[in-house]
Length: 124
Image 1 (cartoon, rainbow, N blue to C red):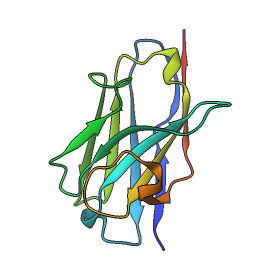
Image 2: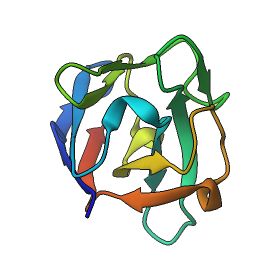
Image 3: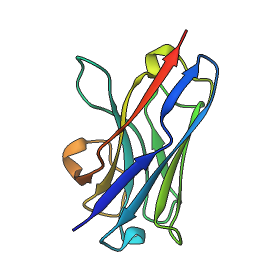
Image 4: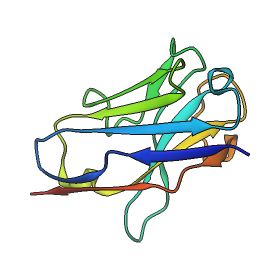
């Protein structure tokens, strides 16, 4: 059974930074692409960023491009999301997810394992 555990969320002022981590266990982490999604109150879950199995390919939603950086350390079975220049509209529960395959995809139905989420709140 795959387990994904997010950490690093919290309350930060606009313009600040946070680094989220997603620790994985239960399946060969390095064999699968990974992604971050977020869900704001009353809204649907949306794609944020994704990274291929090797880390050599990444993809970002337009809303976070240039501010967020996704990375992974396969030796530590951990994925990261560095979030800089945070805005109030970044406030959401952030979820990490493991893809069914190795390549980057943005559709949530291509991800079959999900973490429990971590709250990120950006105050203005």
